[in-house]
Length: 137
Image (cartoon, rainbow, N blue to C red):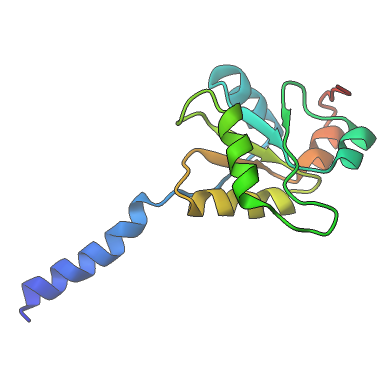
């Protein structure tokens, strides 16, 4: 194998990662800006009890990711997510209590090749602590 062909294979191997979807983190203010200017779809993945306890970010959608036993029905969840999206390139911002679950679900989505996936840094706890409004709907 020539040096040129080895170089080509090496370049092809490393460049494939350049196009992979990547999970990004957003702040409270960035979430608001993206929601208003980019029609970002804000998905609250917490449980019903958590939604009732704290409320949700206004104009966000409730789509519980994990059941009480900690299981994640990926097929059903992805189907429901697709129903909420208005376009294939619409930004998705995931929200949970502290940012832990939303980062896990976000990583799952990016591994599925879904682009424009974000999660709220420090979750709804940070949102509420910073004085941003919540909706009880």
